[in-house]
Length: 475
Image (cartoon, rainbow, N blue to C red):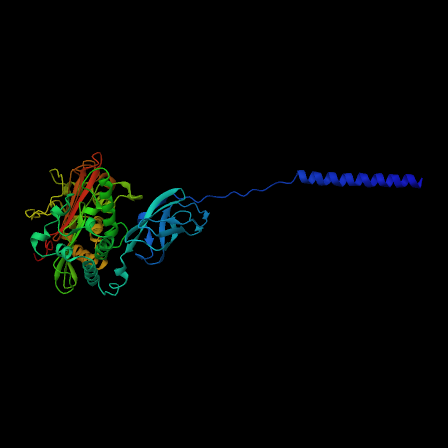
């Protein structure tokens, strides 16, 4: 009987073990696995054209800075740091995305910029983030900008310092070609044609060594505004557009752009800085260390939209000028538009470049700005700013004050624009012969749409800014 009890105990023990094992097995079959869903960062738009770069880089000098790029339509996702993106155009720099979290809507992403730029000019970075792609730029100045001329107390003195630094890189014969007599005959030698030195003064960029070209561009950069899409940035984009045209037709190249000094660069006397080419012409007069004339100024572009050259994609040089003029006309009421419209058809700007006979009309046409609403008057002043902002900030502020004080007696007129509708800015300046003019006691600005010359199935833009009292001042 005891043996039987032991056997029965063993059987119970075995049975208990089986029950425990079954229970554990049952527990395993009911265990669930939890997975984590990762949200990918996405934005509806990146605005590289409004990117803010912390500072200007200097050729052959270690650079460390940042670029802040605005976005819209962020989805609130967190993102990790990116890998380094190499610059194009000017090489030697990299841009690396810093980790962060998107806003649910608008915000900014930041790239760390580092490296040593190998030349002067514009370093471009093509970035892709959140399903969108765009390019931003970092300006690289010549070494003299941060060394011998960095202590200049005014923009005018800095321009003179850089001009002399440029002259020091030239041979005697080159100096004789770039420093010419300050007179009206020389001042009138500028053009909107792809005619190189046959219709312009000075030295062609293509004739300069890399050191000389860097020094020449440093002069232009110091004389111009630093706003993204304006000033020197816009100048380099327009030259890039000419390089793009050069891949389709002869005669177009940034190498055909020039630089010239009419008179000896000085902070005590009078001299004129000229630089430009086919679709850009800048004529700035300095007198006793002050900018006294910022005209004539010509800007144009073909193609008007995005294009890629040298591995860099550009998204419409002088589009800010186009948009500002559209916004001005779009702010007018139907009655105001009727008063502003003039008859006739324009094929180009009335004040064509370089002519000795083209004088601005003494009779104003269109609608007087003082009769417009306060909002529309503000749009007229805003329409002038993309041209004014191509100058250094001090000079731009001075001329803004002049033109603002004369705003009430300024007139606006336009022609063609058959699709133009009150309240619809984008309905204006869309097709060949669409034209608009701002004509004040001093300021004169024209903007026209023309049929493309090289790309004939597109329109391209021509603009000119003049000044009734300050063109070729004193000549």
